[in-house]
Structures are given as C-alpha cells and as structure tokens.
Length: 333
Image (cartoon, rainbow, N blue to C red):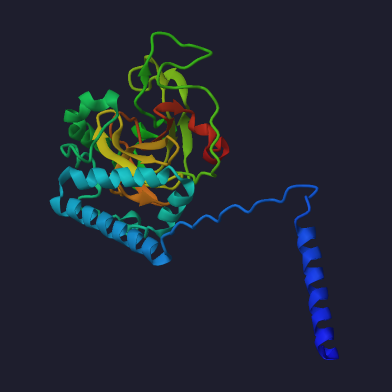
C-alpha cells in the first residue's frame, strides 16, 4: 500500500474517532434539563391605520347626517339635541372652556339692536312655551307675567336721568322668597342651605357698580312685610346697567314670571346654575354658549320689585346657596 494511502486512511480513522467521542459527549446526561422552546404564537392581524381612520370618518359622517336630519325636521327635536350636547360638554371643564373660547361673542349682547326673537323685552316671551320655562314654584304665575312685567317697568321710569324717589336705589329689592312660618336660626328651609360653597373658578362680577340691598337668608319681605326666606342676593344698580355672566356656561332658560320678571338661567357645569332676575332686557338666546363676562341682560325692575336692581341666585343641584360665598361683599357697598 502506498504511503500516501496509508496516511489518508489514518487521518480518516482519527476523524471518525473524534466524531464518536463527540457523539458520546452529546449523549451524556445533563445536570439540569434544558428549557424547551415554546412554539411561537402567530400574531393576530391588527387593523391597519387606514382602517381605523376609515371607521372614524364614517362615524363622523353618520353623526353629521343625523344632526342635519334633526335640523331639517326642526321643532323641539333639534333644540333638545342641542341642549343635551351643550350640557354634555359643560360636564367637562376643559371642553367647556374650549367651547366658550371658540364661540364668537354675540353682537346683540353689546348693542341689543339685533335682539329680535332672541331678546325678551318686558314680558315679550311670556307666551312662548319653548323659551319661557320657569322654575317650578313660578309655573302658576306665567299667565300674568306680561302685565306684571310692564307694571314693574313703568315703576322705574327715569326723570332727568335719575330714578324716581319712590324707587331709590337704596331701597330696591325683590325676588321670589320662600314663605316661612317662623325664622330658623341654624338652618334654612327646604330648597336652600347656609352651607359654604367653593367653586374652583374665579367669578366675573355680574355688575360693575351697585349696592347690596338684600342678602341671602331670612328677612322681612319688602313687598308684603311678612317673614320669608330670600333665595338670592339683591344688588341695586342704575336702570339698564349691563349684566355679565359670572362664568362660562350654557343658557338653559329665558323667560318671564310675575315674581322674577324677566330672568335668565345659565348652567355652568357640575350642577351649578346662576339665575339673574328683574331684568329689563334679556340679550342671550336659550341654548347659547356664553363666556365669563359676556353681557347677557340689562338691569330692570320687572316682576316683584321695588326698584331697579339685579336679583342673583346660585344653585347647585337645585339647592340655593348664598351668592356671597363666591362674590365679594366689598365690591357692592
């Protein structure tokens, strides 16, 4: 056998020997079991970005078509839909702020010349059921609202730029009091409370100038002299002085009653409502989104009133609170 053939066979046998040793090592028992690999799970197919955008776009189009359909139908359906939407956005302070900032201030709130059907002048809307929703305790007085409001307006006629002596600003008061049989020192009657009220927003003063003539609480009614509970705050001011919204909000009621005269109610979210009464004119539409400081009415003496003044009520979930918890007494002295 040639030498090179012998060397090749030797190398081949040596390689086989190494291979056998390697296989023997691989077959030796291990100190610990190896971790078995779990079969890989197939990834579920997730919707791509364009599919999500398509679904959202179709949803928006459907909502817009529904709103347009309600608007074409007209009547109370669209108005109720609008009111529900406005109240829903007011439940979120951030969305309410954005809505109030995006809403263009109404020109009629500054001039009053284009009020038209939106303005309620001395009982003008007393017969409009949709725009004159009244508080429950005033519903029975609606039929005589126009006559009383005109009488109240006549009582505040000006002479030489000043109100008559009978309607001196120092005596101007009124409001829709709660009748009580006796004065309770420590607690208020049903529908009102002496509990403190804190709102995490700074209010805008409803009047630039004025004088407090009657505070929240028990008092002798200035109209009949009987013991009663005043649900708000009376601030005497010059006739037709501008009345501003204290916070941003949605106008929920515009109407007339024999006690409140011309009034406007604004919902500010979180169950908080503000009512402004005895106004000579209302300058905001029902359902309008108003900014803090926006002019919504003018001071008058309509309804149960002894002179030109603004009656302010603050209610939280239907309960009347003292407005001086959020307003400063020193601003109206």
